Length: 390
Image 1 (cartoon, rainbow, N blue to C red):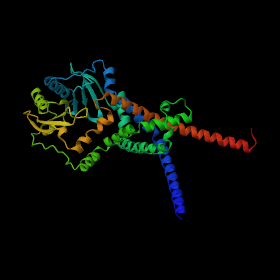
Image 2 (image 1 turned 45 degrees about the vertical axis):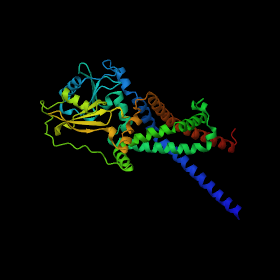
Image 3 (image 1 turned 180 degrees about the horizontal axis):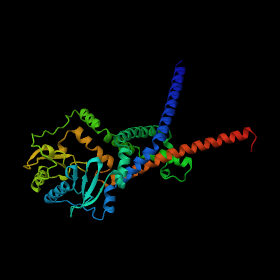
Image 4 (image 1 turned 60 degrees about the vertical axis):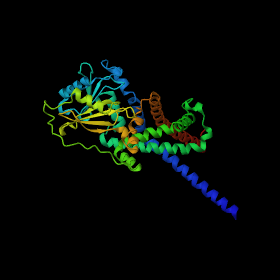
């Protein structure tokens, strides 16, 4: 009796296992076929965007990749010049970065510009699809479909994470067939491409999961942020500003930050580097600055200092390093996804992961096509034999 029960349970388990693996295989296959083109475009554009600043430093002779740290007087002059050039259209001004010696202007409708740090003249100005990097970012983040495309890209990232997990599950029964030499396909045969697809995808699955899921987390950032704060029992940090004196931002005499104001901002967080000036708080009578502290992983930092627009006195400070755990973990999403952690090794790993993802998208479609061709050839051969055709 016990033998019969064990035999029956074993048969039932094997049936369930076989059906589950078949279902996962179909899910992995058809999800990959449907999303292959989108994943290919997202992966290749992401690979290029990792080296965006390096590309700009090569493209614009006025810009170098040296680490330029302007003095408060120079930063104040650059902010004033940005207002003079763009007026109330100015969204924000990014200070020269360690790998890009230029001021970066952000304007409405995703328009951007670069300003020479020495002459304060416009190097270039463009809309998203008018320059290579802007075009690639539009593909990567929005699939060239605006806000709806961004949501779709976020969903694709979630499905991509599911595909990585199902790929690991499908690989496990064949794990003994793994060979390091197959990480470079010998030829374009179906067996060779399929082996590369399986082994390369498995080897890089942790990084693939990290990049695709962090990309989706950026799309659904607000929900993720709330979830992380709730998970760790953290209150959502709020900046409370005192009543300010309203400012007409269209008035050429609008109050602008002085060198003394910027010096106070930097003294508020002595180890920080000033990264951005934002114009959005000026109508309420404040200047908003964004800084990066040494303890922050985010390349632009997420520490903020607010000053009174007229007196220059500091009215509020948000220290990203003093935030609760949930908030600090959420702040790590962008640098992990964009490979901007300050580590050149991680940047190279990001590039390799993006290229492998593009390769997985291509080989998945190619091997499926080869399977269809082979199946058709077999049916034709069978038909010929049945009809006596040699």
